[in-house]
Amino acid sequence: MFHRIKILFKLQFSSRRKTKNIKSKSTLQTLGMNALIFLAVTAVFIGLFYLLKKYISIEINMNVLIFLVGLTQIFSIISGTVELSKELYEPRDLNVLLSLPVNKEDVLISKLLIFYQEEVKRCLLFLAPLLIGYGIYHLGQTPWYYYFLVVSLFLFFPLFNVLISAIIGFIVSAIKMFVQRFKLVKLFGAILLYALIAVLLYFILEKVPNPLRILQLYNSFIISLSSFIEKACKYIIFYQNLVGVIFLKSVLKNLFIALAYLFGVIAVATALLYPFYYKVIWRNNESTVTNKGVVKKNTFHKNTFTTFFLKEFKLNTRDTTTLVKTYVLLIFLPLIIYALNQIYFSISLTELGLNLTLIFNVVVILFVSTGSNTESACIISKEGLEFSLIKTAPTKAKNIVWAKLLFNFIITTIMLTATFLVLFFKARTFFSLDTLLYLLFGILFFNISHILWSAELDIINPRINEYNEVGNSSSNPNVKEASTLSVLISLVAIVILVGSIFFLKTYAFLIFIVIASIFLAYRFYHINKIIKIYFNEIEF
Image (cartoon, rainbow, N blue to C red; front, top):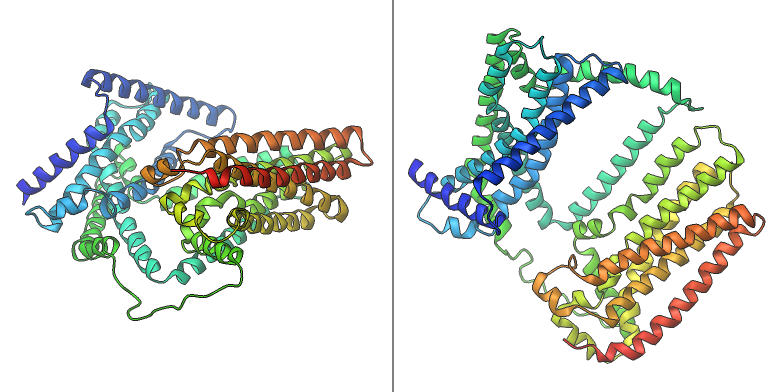
């Protein structure tokens, strides 16, 4: 068994090393680079201790160290869970490894060992500098055995992290496997998560004092932070016990508790992974038929525009994860605006302050909304070789393009309307409904203009072959150009709004919406012209 695990470990280790080091560096260069990172991170932690002591008046003691160790390791476990889930359940080499004359448990253990050595490297660059930096900060007060115990107990930290990540990763993968079989569960889960985030944000922001006094808030923040650190340390299990051993506080008791936690986690990981690991990877990698004998009849529509729009709608909504990734900032825009304005309007604002608050809202909304339109910059490219079928469809070219863009129009309009409803709810005592409606339609017009301009880029210069090779739009230059245009359009719109508010006060918002309307009309005219000239000339 150990011999098989050793061979599997060497195979994967050498493969990962070749993948990461295409232009191989010497061992001395790698060690030198890691040493510089170690020293730099140590210096950052020492600086952090000085800042906490001098400006926030927090005593740098064992509780602070436990809190920071726990915090860094929580982040390590979260990132580790994501990486380990991919490593255990979705790697390209999994089918190859399972086809070798080894047990599935050998593959599992070898992969955990690979990830353990990666976690050791991560802890050497982040956890070790924290512990060493604490000792240097208290130089003269730290006994010699502190550094000896840090080195002796160091390997326990990454081991605990890997086991916790493996347990959480297994649970997440099992849930993912269940959700993939029942898509409605995935949709309702996403809606429930969004609602929970909204409720949590509401309760947190309700605690912001009104009126907001910065100095008073600062003092209460310091007191609350110190109290929170002290209370949190009681719940940072395992790490608290190991740090207690390092400081020689109830050594035998803390060591016994830490080992009990470690063996308990090992037992849970063994009970979950050994019997069910192969079942989960089999379910994730095999294409199984779930709707046996169910044949859906084709639905006929009176016009091809409806057919193409419904096709785009199904493609965009069939996978909740992809939909959320594409429009994540736009989906959370109402919550962002709610949070910002809850803080803004807790402060006593002058007329200038109110104008600046409104401008800053427009800045955030414009940048987020236009930044979410990059999918429009690959409406042709993402069809791949199937575009040949679309191109020969018995319909006008403009029907195909407008059907592809309509979904983006609808979702951005819905989210921008929801955002302005939130803004109206928070700012109705300061700004009239007319003012906010002018801004809504002005931003909506600028946003649709950007969608049309982004689509033009892909119609003029589609990247169909590149998309076939890569399988996504991340390397598409049209997407990058659309991102640049989003910044440019947002900046121009903001300059127009600022100039109108401060120099043409009476007609400020009217001017804003008129310019946005003219720009939108021009983009409508221009894209129709582009479709007529370029669409039928697109080749592969």
